[in-house]
Image (cartoon, rainbow, N blue to C red; front, side, top):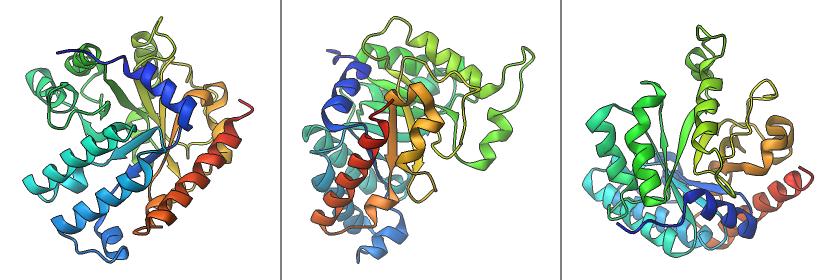
Length: 281
């Protein structure tokens, strides 16, 4: 397997050239209906193809949510495979939002599904859950390094329920979310220009100055738009680490479909707002 250039380096270049915006591909049943599409495989394919056509040539990252494809079974997964390939061919990096997490050979199999260079669903990075212990992610970390891919580890998520795990305090006095950030900083040590192992940190969380977000890796930041955060919030939430933030917008872009021109317009507006908000960081 011939490895790609490391994900962190490819992401840094894409962010510098295209801006850091990440657009989600989230084909909710309600969005399919709003677009005038049926909630079936044909509607799924039309939706995904349109989002890729409208955005893949202008954003740094596209993030398909695997669950919305998997619910249609093998034909839905086939649509996902095609969407990933077409998005990458158009120059966007693809972060597969699958939030996989398990142990041993099962974690290795999940990693092979999304991070092996020859896999049909190969993506530039994968979201993973570390709550069977950070060490359970080792098979994914190893394969990501081998293939030039990356990981985004759930650390400080925007959903209220996340706090009962992520804010739990360990015996050493550090909470679980901070522990995950420390693990990632260790993974990214000495990497240049950016490490390949990032954290998921919600843009809706307010002041995070008590956390060390300087992990020398990317911070995938959901919550912009419909969940209540705005581009202007990014410097306050992320501080000096905002230069490595990948802000994710889904519904507030996707609701402008199925018109390709309207989708592009919404994408460009968010990209410009984010660029302006981060300019002084």
